[in-house]
Length: 362
Image 1 (tube, helix red, strand yellow):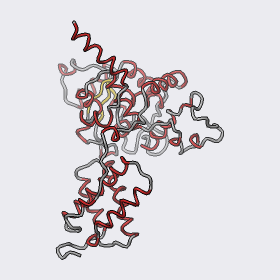
Image 2 (cartoon, rainbow, N blue to C red; image 1 turned 45 degrees about the vertical axis):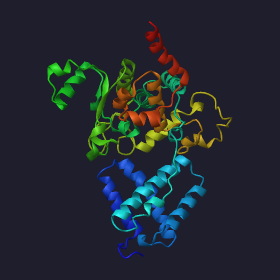
Image 3 (cartoon, one colour; image 1 turned 120 degrees about the vertical axis):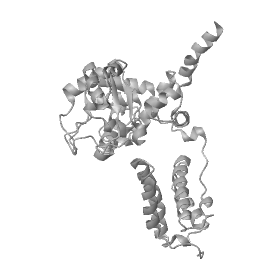
Image 4 (cartoon, helix red, strand yellow; image 1 turned 60 degrees about the vertical axis):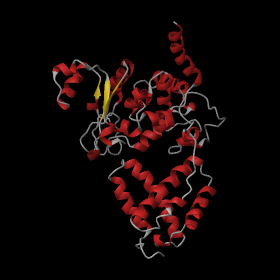
């Protein structure tokens, strides 16, 4: 043990690091960080390393080898070991590990293609799902939730955060935003409905990932606006949440507001092809585990909220939305869109570029 290091228990260091992260990162990001590093600190405890001063580069290598032996993808290793490296830099700053130790974490380098996840929901599948919902389950909560997610590319937390008061679907609703945002009549004349307004309300359990920077109004098509109106009038459960708010996507169970887990489950269910057709995986519906409650994600065709967001952003780009304009709509930087979400349908992009070619030739 080096003389200039201060004894530090791994769990204590993790607690200190998480406290620091909470001041700078969203709750979801901090939670992801915590789980990744807790696996590491639990491993240290199992290995009998109860003082970070005793941690060596050889120990870091052994942990790396154990994680790789579990068959994790290169992308997962990049995320997990990258977070461990950040944690160890903090430990070096507080003199719990030698300053050269963080550099010994071998974080796999991944290409832009590897950074992107190819399991996005395709536009053709999304259109099929919307057609089936419109035909068999019109204006249901599933219909409104999926249609809004696909149309806006919003994150799960943003969809969950919406209240009735955040929906501006008719001209009369503009009077409400005039009061809330201190706007005058002249200002209101510049706005058109319908739109929804995502707002950061951490004090009542609906934070946005990017906090105040995630607050934004998002324009809706007339079709989506009409769908939301009919969902609210016909299908929405008329309840308040534990904070006296009226969630757009309400539930008679739990707190009155759909939980993130419930939204994930509904998306996994809605994106299963067999819900409105035949199974493309040759499974028997009588014994398929993906049709059991809680196991919906085990269907190879089911898609999580993030995959739907990825597909939506890609579809917007295929429809020729510039990254800079789309960035404001979906609350992501243009570079993040290009790196993580921009997975083009090459034929659609060719047709999008054709207009530029024709203009040039005129």
